[in-house]
Image 1 (tube, rainbow, N blue to C red):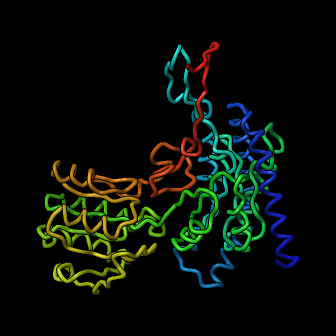
Image 2 (tube, one colour):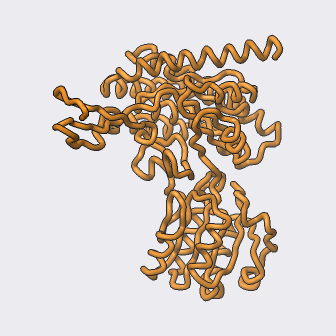
Length: 422
């Protein structure tokens, strides 16, 4: 290891050490202290909106020069609307019930021993993410509310935006009773630093990667610390034979077109063969008029003119205006396709048949399963969780949108009066 690498390793170690010290202080933070700090952060970010947009424009301009896809550039942009959404989210988190200290269970053990299961912070969270700079603020707010400290390492494409947001968060914290270094943004985007960070077992308690499938797989394989991955969103909608045509057209259009570059946008449309002739053409015409590129299997192509789908299309997260279409003969076949190709993120059925709705909800093994609604509702704010730190399509330790409760664990308080075990 050369001198430069040693210096970088020492620098990330220093960041982690500060996070550990801050996490111990955060354990003592009261609900009112955390609420006041979050309000101050929201106020300062609002007042510094022009500075943030200036730094963000540098990132966006560089991304365009580098030829990044439009879907990624869309994720990168911070305009007035998104900054307001960001600060509104922080205020929403501030008003939420404090999860720390909640008694999850309480019972009496041997000889009158009182046993309490109490919610506590995870400790030090390392967040590795790409593109969206609003994640910097969302993650900071959720970690502070749950009494954790957080190390934030964003992608190089959003470095200026992330550093600006992180700087103002620390500035706001310096005027509160919370430690300013409970939120730290890593200034160096060298990927080797991530390898150092995810090796710090005993200092960092959990790693949350949020970005490309390849990045998440790499971190999961290399990390010496438990990982909760924000995996890819290969979302499906199945139009059942009893579906209402207008309802189907509206839901699919929203799920694909409203914001195509996000993980809860639909990527594959499955249609019952009985609905392919009557309902499918209207659904696809509306999408095509909006600029959606359509690819499909042979039966889908018989119902509506489109390009043939390749084998890769069924397992592709497009993150853009493209949709693959497949005709199936039953709700069971639709579920089998989703289980084979899906990412266990968000999947929906459009049907007027209660039995088929129930079958789909019970048998699709995804974090969020819908009946007659758009997959775009898989979102912390939409589900009443406030801002989210990510959407987990794992089963442990959290699943679906991760809010403040998902950033806690628990311990047992054992209250005795002198009991001994016999």
